[in-house]
Length: 137
Image 1: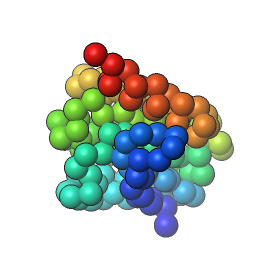
Image 2 (image 1 turned 30 degrees about the horizontal axis):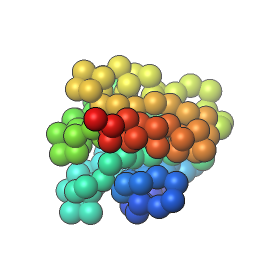
Image 3 (image 1 turned 120 degrees about the horizontal axis):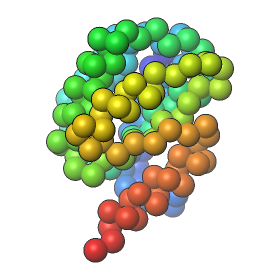
Image 4 (image 1 turned 90 degrees about the vertical axis):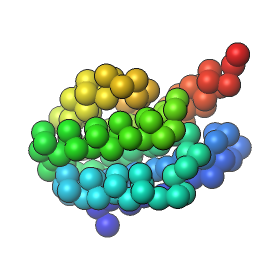
């Protein structure tokens, strides 16, 4: 399956529920849009504090500019539903170019806190730090 969505329960590493979107092999924009729609419409998403977009196993990313705009519309909804939402993006090991920067430039307009990483460990460390900052008075 090119796009998989998994919900992550609070554990010893990250205190708070999350959602993980894993992109595998050849991924098309419509597949990501379908996953984002399912997440926003899911009752399981209420109370989720962070998401990990894991593109580490993505070998081809066939996404148009229009589809990226569609993704940001779902992210805008996510930002409204779950205030202080955190997004960590784990970049592909094989793709030379990433559309992450384009997406980041669009979502910054509605304070969608995000960061791009080369590995999961670094992403989780950042998520923990960001969540601790939100808990500080």
